[in-house]
Every structure is written in C-alpha cells, then in structure tokens.
Image (cartoon, rainbow, N blue to C red; front, side, top):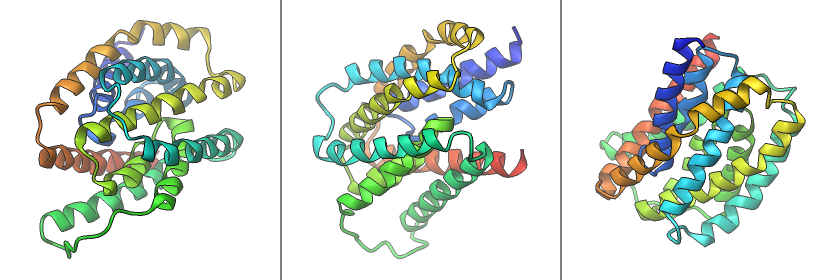
Amino acid sequence: MDPVFWGLALIGLIIVGVSKGGFGGSLGIVGVPFLSAAIPVNQAAAIMLPCLIIMDLTGLYGWRGQWCWVQLKRLLPAAGLGLCIGAMSFQVLSENSLRIMIGMIGLGFGIQWWAEHLGLGQPAEKPAPGPWHTRFWSAIAGFTSFSVHAGGPPLQVALLPQKLEPKTYAATTVVFFTVVNLAKVSPYYWLDQFTYDVLWAALILAPVGPFAVRLGIYLNERISALWFYRVCYFGLVLSSGRLLIIGMTT
C-alpha cells in the first residue's frame, strides 16, 4: 500500500510502454530501477514480467506484419542461449554486476554514435555488421534480460547499426521481447518469483501497459527517421548511464 511504490510503478510502466510502442528505444530499461527504488529488485522484476508480456502482445498487434524476419532468424536462437545462461547463473551473479556491465555497453555505444553524429569523431560510412554481430549481441540481450529486464541496450547494439526503417526496427524489437519475455515465465515460476503479492500488484498495474504502448506507436508514426534515431540513442545513453550509476552506488 506504499504510495511511493505505486507512483514509481505508474511512471515506470508508462515509460516502458511508450518504449515498447517503438518510441524512445532503450528507455524501457528504467522500469525495474524505478520499482526497485521502493521494493527489492527481484520483486520488481517479477511484477514487471506479466506487465511486459501484456505490453508486448499489444505492441505485436500494433506492429503486425512489419517486422524483419531476416533479423529475427538471427536474433531469437541466440537470445534463447542467453536466457539459458541467465537462468543458470541467476543465483551466482549479483544484480549490481549485471547493471554495471549493461550500463557500460550501452553508454559506450551511445556516446560513440553521438560523437559521430555531432561531428566529434570520424563519421565514415560503415557497412552494416554481419549476422554474427547480431547473434552475439542478441545472446547478451537474452542474458541481461533475464534478471532485470535490461535487454534493451544490447539489442540496440545488435540492431541499430543495421539501419532498419523505424517501423521495421520497432516491430522487430517487439517480436524479440515478446518471445524472450514469454520464455522467462517458466524459469521465474521455477525460481519461485511469482508470490501472491507480486501477482496482485501486476494485476493492478497491467491495464496501464496497453495505453502506454498505443501512445508509443502514435509517437513513432509521427516522428521523422532522423529524430527517431536521435531519441533512441539519447535514450540509450540516459538509461545506460542511470543503470551504471545505480550499479556502482548501491
């Protein structure tokens, strides 16, 4: 009944939903950190998972038929491998070590893009990375998604250099996280994360998700490709930096 928890949960879910609608890129990573300011991280992650699945299904309908099968055939098997590693190491790796690792990856990648975009680096044209680049970072995304639902930055590292159309990019990420989040249900149940209180909190918060996803789709359809990627990379730097700070100071 803590009003701080419900306030943080509401804000976090709206941000996550808008991101899952295809606007804001990896801003969805802030969901668990928002909730974990009021409750333990494992409870925050367990509450988020049912809400994320409902958001994913909403986004899947909104972006139906617009995803890239070529990329998904590379992404999903590798993500499955990452999920298996994440499940087996769930009780070995600390949450803060994961936060630091994810934050450093995303922050470094995002700063590099902004440096080139602002003319501070060498903006030489680079060919799109090959399939093993996509597979490697997809496995990292599956691994980091398991514990704290923070697969956004590694997935951006995998997909953004492919320079997909904004709608194709958004739809592909929605399919990716729909499959990944559904695959996490059984391990979470096996690890006894779905307590009575967790499920009730998720049930109360769940209706916020579809509204926020539709808002994200609305914004995505009205923003130019240039501004879409600016927002995505800004979100990557912001969320990765926040995750790094949390990991180093808690």
